[in-house]
Length: 301
Ligand SMILES: Cc1cc2nc3c(=O)[nH]c(=O)nc-3n(C[C@H](O)[C@H](O)[C@H](O)COP(=O)(O)OP(=O)(O)OC[C@H]3O[C@@H](n4cnc5c(N)ncnc54)[C@H](O)[C@@H]3O)c2cc1C
Image 1 (cartoon, rainbow, N blue to C red):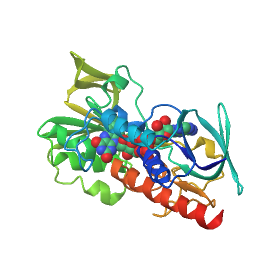
Image 2: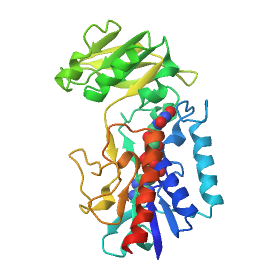
Image 3: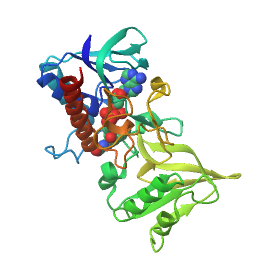
């Protein structure tokens, strides 16, 4: 029986583990893919306090070592179901774990276009996060792919840093809120291309140099130094099976206290309903979720 089972070994889950282990709790962290989470695919992080510049992999390794030094155990197993009760169950593709409390930190996946080279270019020409990577494209030419609020917000943000921003929209109009769309006014260096599908990433010596777009029958090459994908995220919640309350976009609902609708189940990081999804907000959630789980163990179990 574990005091806390943590689902996901990204920055949120590993931070929660640090807090729980320092209180000598019996915990296990379950990770289905990559220890360290999404940040491992970033070649350079410049907005994590305390590090002027660090690769996502090094940051993840540091966190991993910190958890292991404190006696933490990470198992590579995919959680497929959780069950509530005073003693909760976490069922994976290999095992079943009993837990007094659970911290859900399973993150989200960015939607991709599914084109050739895409995986290799992520973190190296293709980005999902303007706040994280916008500064790398100072005075350069970039494109943002998407037509909703985040695509527009990203394009406006990048227009203050970059020489030129193409906003490539699949449909014939933008899908964002009126106020957000209005923010595009007078942004002379943003060019919106409607009814366009990106069909290829163009590279030279493995470096991204442009995208090929298709409008009806016409194909055109647009030269860019960077691509920002803003076509949505998919929260990793399949295993929660309607047990946990979700918002309309399928993020787990909770307040800043990181409590879910189920007593003893907490949520942290990108999988939680919130406006800002960054490393700093993920580790902040991990801290809060762990401290609230520790309180729960003290007061309710
Ligand atoms: C290329 C790239 C660059 C980025 N750059 C920056 C940056 O410079 N600065 C910044 O602040 N942020 C950056 N981000 C965003 C940052 O990585 C995320 O905000 C952060 O990783 C969120 O942490 P998390 O722990 O909530 O989720 P994640 O990192 O998504 O980790 C969740 C973990 O849970 C695991 N998981 C999911 N489902 C299950 C399951 N069923 N069973 C077991 N495990 C499961 C996943 O495999 C994953 O490892 C970047 C993201 C990417 C992709």
